[in-house]
Image (tube, rainbow, N blue to C red):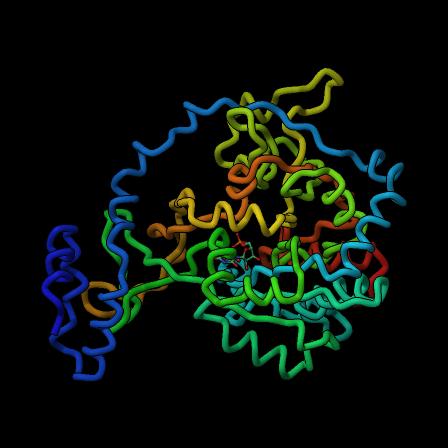
Amino acid sequence: MIKQSILDNIEKYHQEQLLRYYEELDDEAKASYERQLEELDFSYIDIFNNRNSSESSMDNVYEPLQAMKIEEIESRKDEFRQAGIDALKQKKVGAVLLAGGQGTRLGFDKPKGMFNIGETKELYIFERLIQNIMDVVNETGVVVPLFIMTSEINDKDTRAFFEEKNYFGYDKDYVFFFVQSMAPSMSYDGKFYMEAKDKICLSPNGNGGWFSSLIRAGLVDKMKEIGVEWLNVFAVDNVLQRIATPEFVGATLLSGYPSSAKVVKKADPHERVGVMCKKNGKPSIVEYYELTEEMANEKDASGEPAYNYGVILNYMFRVKELMDIAGNSMITHIVEKKIPHIDENGELVKPEEPNGYKFETLILDMIHMVDDCLVYEVERSKEFAPVKNKEGVDSVVSARELLKLNGYEI
Ligand code: UTP
């Protein structure tokens, strides 16, 4: 039986569609569906209803933020390297792979990391990333603890794949999986979608919940036990990125800041990447769709675009500050997506165009939540090859080209 408090919420939030098929279900399906209803967070409807009254971008004051440039990094390389190697040898640095996304743009039905980016041989995205960290392990002689975030959708496949491939040679005692939370999705008119008659439509709730998910999984204790004080967090899809390299680690630690972000010069003023800036006096990242025309075209004193540095989803955070902000609420972004769902006849619909909203918190907002950030420039052609789409910009095709340009056999 559905609890009265849930029925009240359904009525209050006009979500009667959730009960459309309930009477058709057998007892087992009913029980499972009741559990889903109990866990359903109706407050997403408030977030949706208040979407226009929440913090408006008009109220924020944006300013450009300079990066530590490649030339400066090069000139201080030895100093940074040494500081980084010292920290890595003491296992003060862990790595966090964000692999909970659905990768809908790629259209691959398994976890994105299982995608074979090779042409003449098998080379899985996960394998490439492990090879990257392995460079640092080989250099320092010490394993970097690796935390891998999955979602309820891809957790089983991801773990099984790592087992099957023997962790691509990584020390499995230092690999820790954890599962992120899910959020409901809804139609343009604010109704929660269902993906089957006995299933509410849920999807991963964005990459911003990674640290709270780590806490929930009990892995903060594991980090303490190992002595991890810093985390290098990175996305699954950039097959060229460097992870926990001594220079980046050293520069971050020596900066005295609680966070750092790798950035690249933007390919053009409107490139679809988050841009480093100051918001209300503090480092922040403005999403490409929030960047105004005026900001995109603004120039600095030397004639360069003022908002010229795009983030590549490779950040370092000090664990202490992450703990300090762990209880703070994060901005929930409402993102238009294509959401498969059942229609009023119970038929599955797989839309070709966006048909509703998902709710996500984003790691980029955490930069604004901690006090300061080292903006660290890396060379785009050497460290940025994201696999978002099948072809075109940021695709399998462009990533393969970039891998080859960097001398990888693929
Ligand atoms: P994207 O923003 O590219 O999202 O994720 P996505 O879901 O993977 O892909 P699309 O938009 O559906 O095509 C950037 C990084 O954040 C991770 C992804 O796995 C990727 O490493 N991520 C994203 C999560 O870990 N959890 C999420 O809920 C979303």
